[in-house]
Image (cartoon, rainbow, N blue to C red; front, side, top):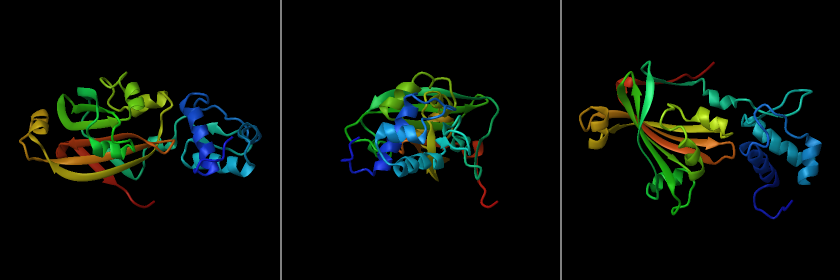
Length: 235
C-alpha cells in the first residue's frame, strides 16, 4: 500500500474500512476481518490497524466485545439521536409534499457546507412538512449527487430520509444544528398559509457521514406553534 499521501496512515486505512461498509462488502451486523488479516491485507502495522478500528468504534460505526470479532453496527447508536436534545413536531399524521427536486449549480453556501467545489452540482429537494393535513414547515435539503440519486427513490413519501439511506449503508455519525429565528418570505408565507414577515423557527443542519464527509445540508423553517426544541443538560 502506498504511504505517499499526506493523510496519516491510520486515516487512509480507516477510509478503506469505511468504503467497504458503504459499498456493502461488510453488511450491518457482520464481522470484519481479524486484526491479523487486516495487517496482511494492507501491509501496515498492528498499531495502525488498531488506531483505525478504534476510531470507527468511537464513531459508533464498528463495535467490539471481549472475546468476539469486531462487527459493523446493526444500527449506529448515534442515529438513535442525542438523548439531551429533543425535537418534536406537533401532529399525529405526518407526511411530506415535494415541491421540486432538481440539480443546481447555485447555492454556494450549501456547497461550502457540503465541502464541494464551487463548480459542482448539488441536488435540491424542496418540500413541505405536513402534520394532520396542515403545512408546518418549509424545508430545503441539499445533497451531493451520489446521495441525491438514492434519495430520488423515496423522497416523495418518506418523512425522514435517513432510515432509507441506512438501507444503502449510508449512515451518519454527527449532526450540527443552528437554531435561529427568521421572517417568512412571500414564497414561504404562501406555502405555509401565513402573512409575509411572520416569525419562523429556522433550523440549519449539516449531517456528516461515517467517512467524515457531509451527506446533507438543510434549512427547515417551522411555524413556531408546530415545533418544540428541548435541550437537557446533566445526568
